[in-house]
Amino acid sequence: QKEVEQNSGPLSVPEGAIASLNCTYSDRGSQSFFWYRQYSGKSPELIMSIYSNGDKEDGRFTAQLNKASQYVSLLIRDSQPSDSATYLCAVNRRNNDMRFGAGTRLTVKP
Amino acid sequence: EADIYQTPRYLVIGTGKKITLECSQTMGHDKMYWYQQDPGMELHLIHYSYGVNSTEKGDLSSESTVSRIRTEHFPLTLESARPSHTSQYLCASSEFEVSGNTIYFGEGSWLTVV
Image (cartoon, rainbow over all chains, first blue to last red; front, side, top):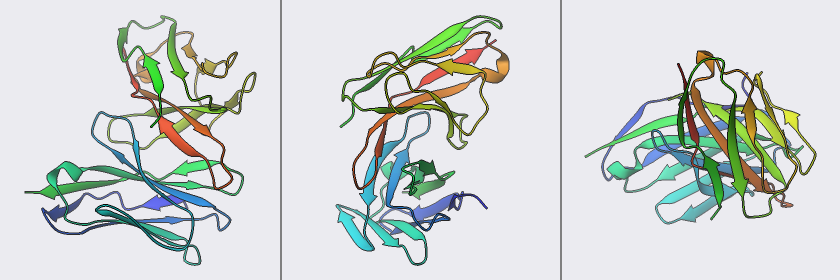
């Protein structure tokens, strides 16, 4: 079992829809969680971080964390073609060691 | 916003050549990393450093070496490049925070070994 698991996709949604990206992790002592976006041929860029159970909203993005279920998700509202990218889930484990998932490829169709 | 600079951005070299990929950051971050990523594939941690004079190997076995003589500088060296080293190399840095360390990436160095 990988330490951070994501569906590889591709996930395809129509423009204007809600895209839902999911991530599970194995280390129950993990403390902080991050979502990165990576366009093809580019380096990952930080979208959001979340540390506490519940939802955290930033513009069209909402991160959700459930530590009991070891589950973190990212919702993208009003999806745009420019959101088409690979989304990486990253988990900071109890020893402050960051682990990345393999990423979910999202395509938003006009 | 992070300021991490990588050079060269793109490089084509012949087999057997020695190459050093440069990475510098201006944020004073203690921890620095090198990741390797093939197109469309996942990130693999190959080296990291907790600070000056600290270097550690990552999860992916690599024939490269690193050094950390100054806080801001973390170069990666391949003594003898091979076609299997063709990949994108991403440098990153982070500052430790109580809530966890946020990693910021440079723009990457694309290496092609022919």
